[in-house]
Image (cartoon, rainbow, N blue to C red; front, side):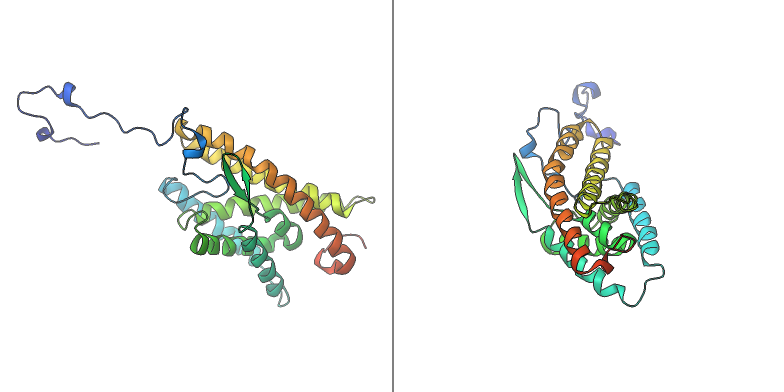
Length: 240
């Protein structure tokens, strides 16, 4: 901060009048329920510009990879699951002293594979524009965070279905649990990197993902079981 000589009264001491540094946004004693930092999405006004730019660049590369060799029959399926991803954010439940909503990036990863990298940015953009969840400037970082977690969940699902005794419910549930846990871990690391003032929120953010993990694991497990019975083509690479 640059202070001009006229900032001090004539004859006064600069040491006595030097302005105090701004108070941190969050302190270790700040009650979590008073903090306006989401525990699912990263909101506008929190992240530094280099991180925002890096998020958009990474999300763009991931979307490009997700769109490669897109077949004509795939966009309708991507659109349906994009809508499901958007609607999931409408389902809130309390995690005292705040509330969280469902993610379903694990489900998208299991069903869409790398095409989830197309659905997630669109869904997040709609959530930010229409519902105020997350932010537009943090869209790249949020899309990268959820997209990488979805791909990790799909990789785990592929490993599980290669087993000769694979179980559809448990394969979907475990893959989604890993995706949600990865999402929470990345969010926690980003918040933690912002400084000591964000450490209490970072710790709480990871804990807030645990009930989301449990609910989405069950939902995805039943979804995979259902799709295997009625539409196995939606689960490529799985045993018949």
